[in-house]
Image (cartoon, rainbow, N blue to C red):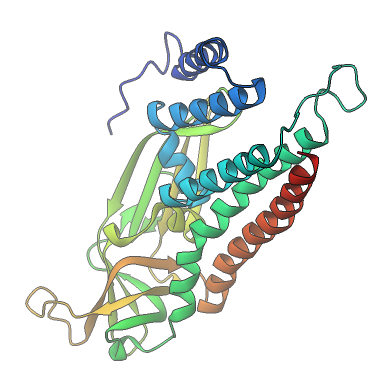
Length: 318
């Protein structure tokens, strides 16, 4: 297993370096550009977040695995956040900060508090947009026997069968048909980030008595696996080892778009496959739909209620 080449146990942690760069950028922006302190703060926060994601090893894989939100959804959320702030400045001359820091409201005016809520609600946009495609794929699929899978969205409910010999999970030490593992390190912000990862096992089948549905590990999404597979954790000080795995005979639902497979490569009587991406979950199709729908609805409600209400206050206060 290869660890990332960063100073994990000696020297200055990379998080501190990125924080220092962010502070220098803040001073430079404030003194070199004729923008308000509020806009400077927003710019520096955005720069800091992008720098952490881009330059700190393991942050993006950890962020995606945890949230399931892709780059496109994050960019959409950023555009919504920037658009609302720009609209309020276009309408008027908002003052985010109070004249006195001793005010009972702290240092924020009504506009300042509303804009803070609005920026936070943009996260709801990212959540809803990031999980909408999952929900659509699950909603469009219907359960069919493996032997009847054809072109189009389908779901097969069955038990897992390894194509080869099961392999022991690195944390659970249980036989698995496939696993993904990660080594995580405690971060400056009381979280964990991935510093190395590994996978074991190979292709496997979902068998329902009528036939076998082929699943290739490279078709699986890291977030879906982390949420829908078995999970095991082993902590050791500042580091921990995690495992997400599927075991032989696990009862699952497999969702994807059907396709044919090579009879020369898979001479089983009835073997069909799926197009990427594929969802494999320890539950029924109804449960998987609820899993995705909850995230979409929560994100949309947060964005519409929190974002819509705070934007109205921002416009009136401007």
